[in-house]
Image (cartoon, rainbow, N blue to C red; front, side, top):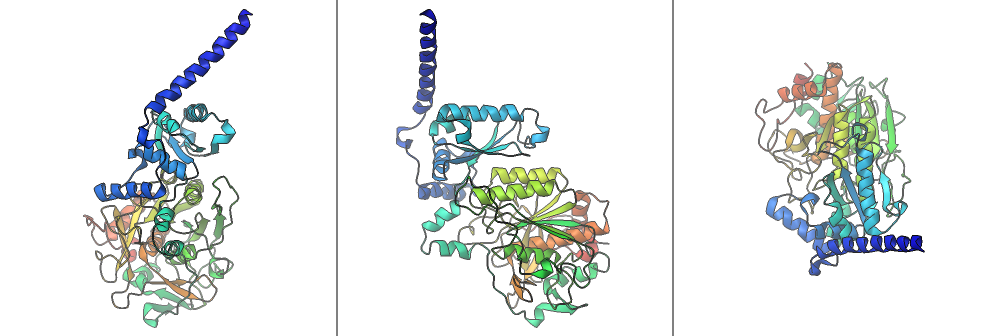
Length: 503
C-alpha cells in the first residue's frame, strides 16, 4: 500500500511540475499574441525591418514573430547549435551530441511528442537539426538556451507569400526566378570566332581572358557549381565536354534537390537542370573551346562538378535551402574541388546555408557568390545572402567600359569584391552562352553570369599556380583589378584583368 501511495505521489508531482512549467511559459505570452500572425502580417514585419534598418535576422525577431513563421511554414524549425558562433562543424565539436539531445528533450517535453514525431533531420556534418514545433511555449523555452547559434523557421516562404499578395500570383514569381529555356541568335558584334570554331563572348575581351589563355586554360582545377543543374540536352556540357581544344577533363553531375511540397520527403529529382539557369552558369565558367560554332567558357580546360540544389535562383523554403546546404558540405568534402560558384541567394540570412558556406570555407575552398540581381521583390536590398558573408567573394555585373556603373538589374554595396562587365553599353546585350538545347545559343546577364565568369578567372589563376593557397589566388586577382589597393565603396576591387592575374 505504501509503495502504491509513493508511486501515486511521484506521478502527481511530475504532472504538477509539468503543469507549472507550461503555465510559466504560457504566462510569458501576451494575451493578444496567442494566435499566430498571418503570412501577410509576417511579411509586413520583415519588410518593416528592412525599411528601418536595411536588414532582417530571425535572431532579432520576437518570440511571437518567430513562432508565427514556424507555424505558417509547416511547423518546421531549423536550429543551429554550438558553444560559440563558430562551433558549426560536428566533427570538431565534442559536445555536439549533448547539445542536440538537450534541444530535442526540451521540444519533446513541451510538445508532448516522441522523438520520431519531432525530429526531421540531423545533419551529418553540421551542428544543425530540423524539427517540428507547434507551440509558442516551446519557442520560449528553447530561446533560453545559450547553445543556440540560430533558431529559424524551416519552411517559411517569404517570396511565395509576397507573391500571393500581388496581382499576377505565381506568374510574377516565375518571371523573377531566373529560369527559361529560350534560345537567341547572337549578334555578330557580340562574339569573335577563334580556333577551332568557338565563339568568344565580347565580355571576355573586356577582362583580357583570351590573352590569359596563352598562359592558362584552367587545366587541373575543378570548379563546383551550385545551381539548378545542367541540361541533359546540351552535349557540350555532357558527352562532348572534351570537344575541340578542351581535353583531358571531366564533368560530374549530382542532384540534392527534393522536388516536393512535403518537407519530410527525401527523394531527389536528379542532376538535370529543369530551369535553364544552371546550364548557363556552367557554360560561362567552363564550356569547351569547341568546333561547333558555340560560345566558349572562361576556364575551358577546367573540370566541373555541378549540383542541382534548387529549382530556381530564389532560395525560398525548406528543400531549396536544404539542397544548397547539402551541396556546400558535399563540395567541401570533395578534395578535388578548389573553387565553388553559386549564383543564387536570399534577401536575409539562412542559418543552415551559412553553416554550409563556413564548412566549405574551412576546407580551403574559394567561394564566389552573386551579389544580387533585382526582381520585383528584391530591388530594395543591397548585396544579398550569402554573398555578404566574409567567407565568400561577392560579385556583381557592370556596364561595358565601366567598373562602377552597375548593370540595369544588378545590386551593389560595400560587400562587393569584384565586378564583371556583362552588359553592353549600346545594345544592352549580355553574355553569350550555350543554350539548354544542342546547337543553340543564348544571352545571360546579371550578377549571376558575373559570378560564374569570375570563378572561371580564378581557375585560370590557380591552374597557373597549382601550389598556391586560396588567399594567394584572391590576392593575385585583387592586384590585377581596377581599384587595387583601395577598393571602391560599392564595387570592391572592380574588374579583374585576367592576363595580369596569370602572370
